[in-house]
Image (cartoon, rainbow, N blue to C red; front, side):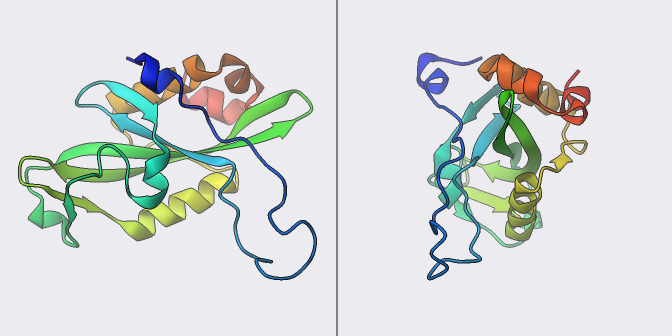
Length: 168
């Protein structure tokens, strides 16, 4: 369920090339200007954009210590960050790539686990137009699909058939 604060969050849509074609510093770097993290909280049945996740400072990641071993977070609750890439075609903006990465968070014990390589790989796959959500539980997948549809129905309708099939 979205409240007014979450409703005001928008997806980041493509901006100009950061290098402006000059060929100097920054050439070959990856621009993250058209990717947005959607937090999926199946425990409270909500999904929302939280740009803080770009730097591991999302609402769900604050005030926890990240542990390198998943087994050290045995009471952790599962959350997801869906890396959503937006591109534009002749019909307007559309969801180009969606890949979700898992987090385990044990708020009472202030511990959390996430696989940084998995998150980086999923961000990269999303930017390349890949879809990876088949590993989500049904509640989380439904929350993400409903969020993408309700957030911007035109962007959902402009998206490739593969994305629509995943969430119908």
